[in-house]
Structure formats: C-alpha cells, structure tokens
Image (cartoon, rainbow, N blue to C red; front, side, top):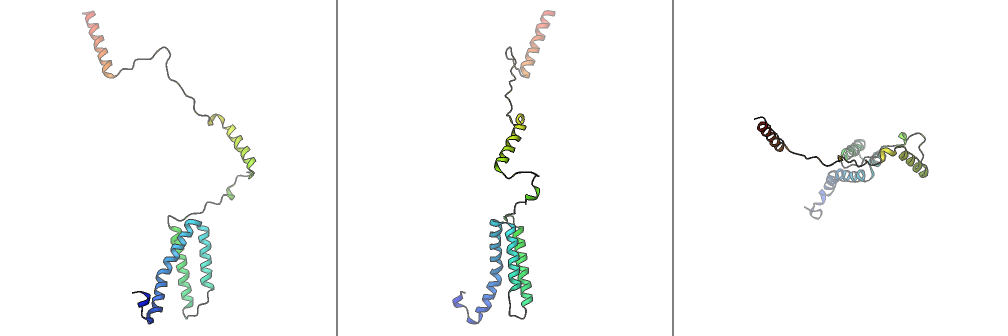
Length: 164
C-alpha cells in the first residue's frame, strides 16, 4: 500500500507510526556516521544539543512531559549504542597533561634534542658488525654419523690386523 492508496483517515496515524519506526533508525545511523568521522567528543556535544532541544521544545499535548522523557531516553540510549559500536572513532588521549617538563614546541629545539639523543645512543644505533667464523688454515671436514662409524670400523680392522 502506498501513500496514494492510503485512506485519508489513516494518513496521520501512518505518519506517526512511520516517524516512530524510522526516526530512531535515522538518528542511530547519523550518530554512527558522526562517531566514525568526528569521534566521541562530537558525539557528546550532539547528545547535549539534542537533549537541550527536547527539553526546550514547547509541546501542546497533555502528555508533553512524558513525551519529552521518552525522547531524551531515545537520544541517550541511541548514542550509548553508537559509542559502544566497534567502528566508533575514539578520541586520542589528551597529552597536554602528560607533557615532559621543559619540552619545547620549537621545531629547531626539537631537532637539536633529537640529534643530541641520537649521538648519546650512537653505539646502540649502529648496525651489527659482520662477524666471520672462518678458521684460518683451511676448512675442517664435516662428516655425518655414518662416516664416523665407517672410519671407526676401519680403524678397528687395521688395529686387529696389526695386533693379530
């Protein structure tokens, strides 16, 4: 059934149903996009702004206060779900409070401090030297177990011939 075939008496009822069904989905999708692109601080600002908007809106209905409470509940729960979503961009930690005393913001001073630090760690920053394990005077024959056993057997045979 489309809007054109809807009975005129059902238009307002259907509109309210559509708003209540799709409104939360739209708010959630928009808040997720904001969280992914701008981070949590912006999401906090959005929440404060939406709650303020709901509270300051004049509603001419007998259940206005209850409607506002439900609207605030919707905003808070929707944004809480967005914050907990794994795709939400979390803000970087504030580093101003962790800054090292006396650390300069001047690029030339920072470069000088970097060079000084590199010079202080000079031996550790060198690549390892190539070490040779070659023994002077020729290479040693490397033999396996079978060859060792064969040589021992031959040695025993020679010894038994000389003693026998």
